[in-house]
Length: 40
Image (cartoon, rainbow, N blue to C red; front, side, top):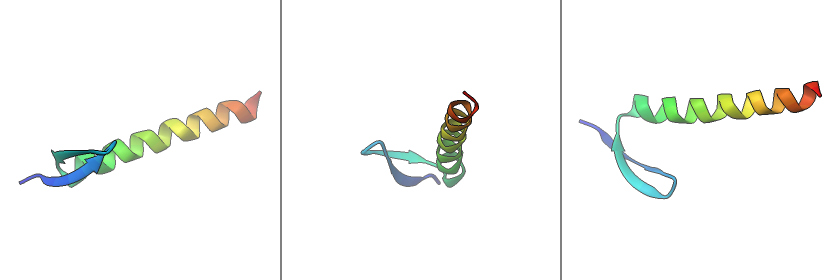
């Protein structure tokens, strides 16, 4: 049974695994952006 999480200020029903995956993907994207800025 999916748990309720707030994502982008919207109440959505997703699994905890999906929530962590979304958060992890966002963090990975941020890290990649920071690395690109550092390389320039």
